[in-house]
Length: 113
Image (cartoon, rainbow, N blue to C red):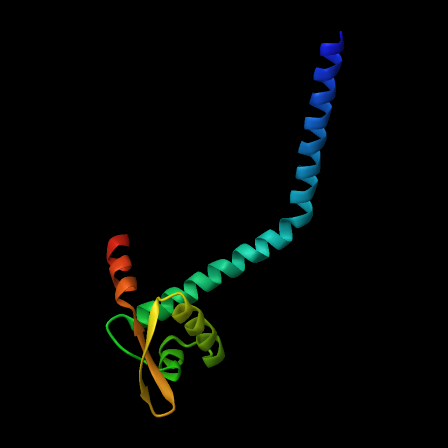
């Protein structure tokens, strides 16, 4: 009988945990959807930047004009891409540096295709 009571107690605990997780997911549904949407937008923006830089060097203003995105947003992405080694800072043209895709990123793109 004690074994049966232990089993019922374990089932109640398991059901309580499931209910708590279900409620938590429902509460956070809008936050999760917003975060997912933002990630999709960022991936799309980064892809556009990389596509623009394929086979050419460009400055921040040239990239912004070429893909119709604000310069501050481009600068933010470029800083991130540079930090993670996906782009390389080239020679300076006036007050701006030219940027191009790193060799390792070009190799990775060929592997993905």
